Image: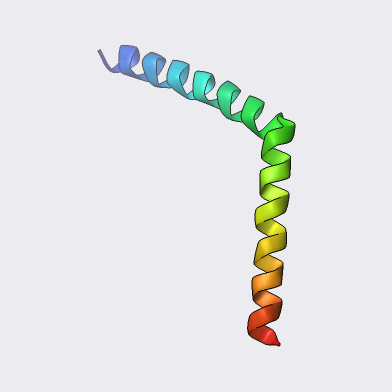
Amino acid sequence: MYVLFLFARALIVSFAGAKVRRFFNSANFSATFFQVFLRGIVKWLEIRG
């Protein structure tokens, strides 16, 4: 039973990992991250200034 649980968990982790990797590799993620990053810098500069 425990072995079955470990196998199922490994399967889920690998499947989720592949999906996450595909998402992170997509250009859409890069653009979104860059936008959020720039917005964060601007906000930080506003607070500092």
